[in-house]
Length: 57
Image (cartoon, rainbow, N blue to C red; front, side):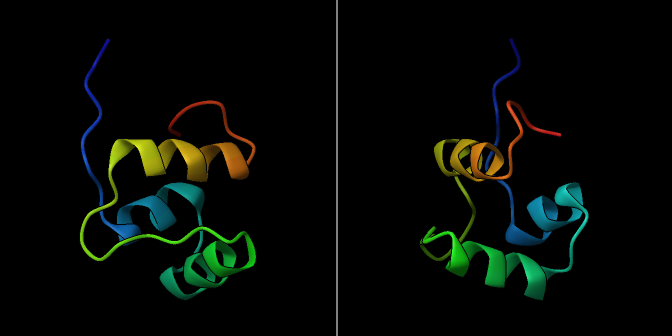
């Protein structure tokens, strides 16, 4: 099992196939608050689950 690494918001938006501005709106609509800096694996998992993905794309 590969250890997940922190990612930028842009990296996650790219993986989900959306622009960074769309990703930010989507986070806001889904009440996902991210601290400044990189997105830790636990928050990434929450984002992927809300986006109906079981695992990282």
